[in-house]
Length: 89
Image (cartoon, rainbow, N blue to C red; front, side, top):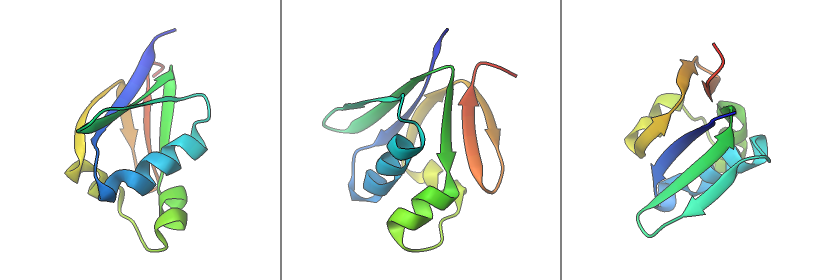
């Protein structure tokens, strides 16, 4: 089993994103550093638009995530509703 991860800039805009990822991936480990936040998970991590929208109280296009994205690891599967990182095809 290998970890996938996503790293986001640590700022006000990413607060709801990180919270949403934690809610949807209770197995994930969040590591906060001064300038970035790394979220690790074994094998799979999902970022769900609906959860982000619920926390933000507004519409959210998953492409907005890329503004604050530093890096990621894993195979990326993305549609309008979900960005999934995994090592399983």
